[in-house]
Length: 324
Image (cartoon, rainbow, N blue to C red; front, top):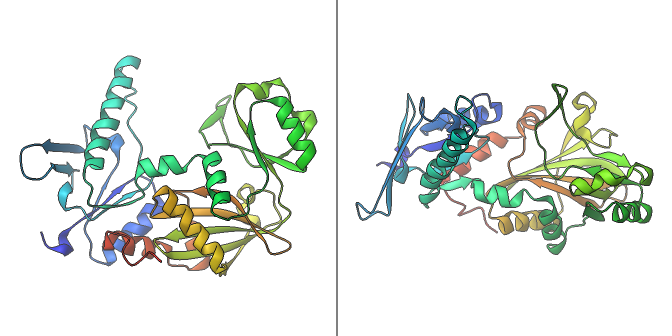
């Protein structure tokens, strides 16, 4: 197969404007794209793989109604925001069984092909998505980490708040949540000792000393290209009011960039979105890494060529030339 014919797989949900931006760039560059969503299996998605039948360890194929990809010729996989099937029409036990077969069948076939670059491999994404692990890695690699506590012990929480206040509470993992049928979400919020009660025992919570911020930063790294955007708002959590935000493109100190590269390398990621806080003395504080974070609106606000950078990395098909 000619190099120009090798496709990029894009795994994502149907309405993903960020993936659309990258696909537009891939189309502009003349690279074939096969877009699929695991939830479409059985109707608009077919997958097959053979093992032990040729000199190659695995030979496989993925088909949608409009595209076919021979998996051994795929140059890269953009694992964006795919949705796994839930089989709601089946009985509960049958649905769990079928969902497991898809996850470990389709997932296993894709993982078996070692050649393509993944942005990012879902197993690496999952490993990097644990905030307590991020905090430890960030500090080990020289980043400034606010004093933080993960606990389900109410007494420990009260002691931490008394020692490090003002303190904020943050979720350990965003999760779809409804109350009385109304979708809810959680922001970083102030917390005081009087608010801590025995309900804390039900699950670990993340508490963190509040950084007296001058601004926030969202930093997207693609391979070894850095896109850093300063976000000014005056808000504790800028996600609560996008209309109140203003943006400016900034350069980061070299030592900080190297530390962020090291975080990606530690987790085996080709790309990631970092949230940092800039204090009034000009010091950068680690907040978190989102291995598959949103950045599309920042490209629209700043003109930074983020989607083109991801497309170029996928076309290249490896990280050569993106390492220091």
